[in-house]
Amino acid sequence: MTTAQEVKTLTHFIGGELVEGKSGRFGSVFNPTTGEVIAKVPLATVEETREAIDKAQAAFPKWRDTSVAKRAEVVLKFRNLILLLKIWRSFYKSFVQKVGKQLRTQKVKLLEV
Image (cartoon, rainbow, N blue to C red; front, side, top):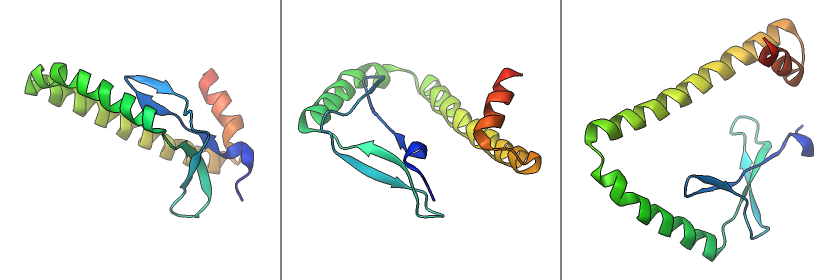
């Protein structure tokens, strides 16, 4: 069972920055396999939504004027980072299962290497 300590609190991503939610309201993010709550996501206020839309609209002209080749490069780099993260997590879980230690303990040791 998931404990309160294991549930992450997420943020908004507005204008290239992580922004804490202001509404005080949250939605649950579920692990689709177990049904456990793994994170809580802030529900945006009208003002936060407007800010995100305004910043996205302000950023769009620069993105639109970027060459197709450069945009493709950015998107592919982002995709590769996501794939690398998935591969790392898979390796990490396998490693921890074989060693038989808790995930957090091993994470610290791996980061020290």
